[in-house]
Length: 219
Image (tube, rainbow, N blue to C red; front, side, top):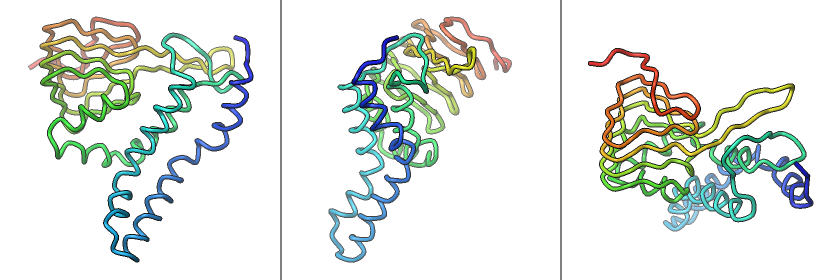
């Protein structure tokens, strides 16, 4: 694909800076905590708490306005700017410190709102157990009345090396309404789970699949 001036500008800005994004967040949190200790200003404490959530989210939403992630195959790590790898780096803080998202489960439905804020479509009466991991928070679609078991893993992307180039396939994961998703299940890009499904524990969906391979026996 043709490399544009926008690609060059975004690569010039993002490539050297985003690898340090998690470290920058820690510095910013430390700055607000230091000022809270010094001044007893509770606004600083609030900013320290909200920074790991709001800064990645708002940066991601801004980047999506400029260069939205497109579904389908692509290559990254080249002159053509990759919105996905940039968004992935913005979300790395939650891989390093999963406790940040676990804390959201103390307030009912807050995790659902969190995913919606990133761009996912989450229906009514959707229940996540705290061990759930969503890698790309913007591309998950779940219907109404769904329960998702512990340690389920949702990844709308898969990465391979093809002829020395990093290949990316990216597609939204879709779960229908009135579904039960058993614990330790994995969902790859393009997964579609029909309405009224009961997925056994340990099921494994590969790319663009609507039927799982079950790695564990059903109860």
